[in-house]
Image 1: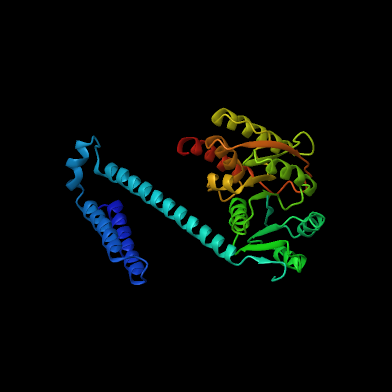
Image 2: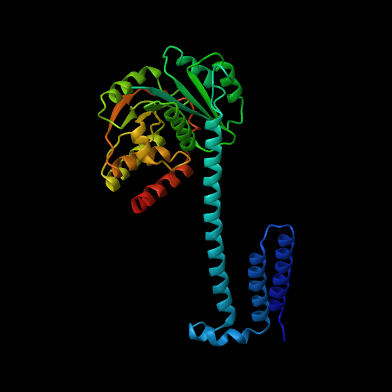
Length: 114
Length: 224
């Protein structure tokens, strides 16, 4: 029988699948990205409905409950994504910085022109 | 030796006219870098520099930070075949009469970088005095170079020295980065005393900036 927490997780995963689809339709996600995201959320739904699928793996890494395993997995995913976002932001910041600086040097004006 | 002044400017509408007027007596070529000011600074500069051939204006479309503005100004100056640049702050805290001391040191050819050191015993807010001294001691312990005024924005650098530094800091960390890289790359440097007048305690390096700079000091120790 599905309990409230499982239901909440399934609804959340379905909403995220919809959001991924929306962003894909707007051209903000590529095909490979939407496949990855859908994959993550479909796996989440399957594990939420059939938690015993992972119980064997959880025991081998000394985690008693599948729920704990999913919390740990969620944390790892969040940390990886945050790091990726941080690096992406830094790269973008650097590119914007260099672009603005180079453009401004091209437009240097002296007292006669300004 | 062809020397230009680089003046990064950000939101200095109250002071910039006075600062530029102070430079009129000294006929140095100036590269003014407006770092995306959101007040009337740019309009005031434009009005002031009309028909002044020795002043070049470079304007960032958005605010990038002091480090970026300094790099832009220096790159523009070196592109215009200047051999050295002298950085100054645009809030009027530096005295243009001190420029001669920098020129004297640069023309000896013995230094890549000349650092202006403010007399921190007079007129400097206590928190800045303590922060500055703490930074000097920390840099001295980590990098083996003692500079009495780490955060002074009044400093000169040759083209060769600038190219060796490969500055990365976009913000206020640039001054500390220069000191750290002087030590790391063994550049020839010296300190000279400069006069300073403090006008605005609310501008400049904030506590958050200081924490960021502190983290960078440790990061550079590992990665440089």
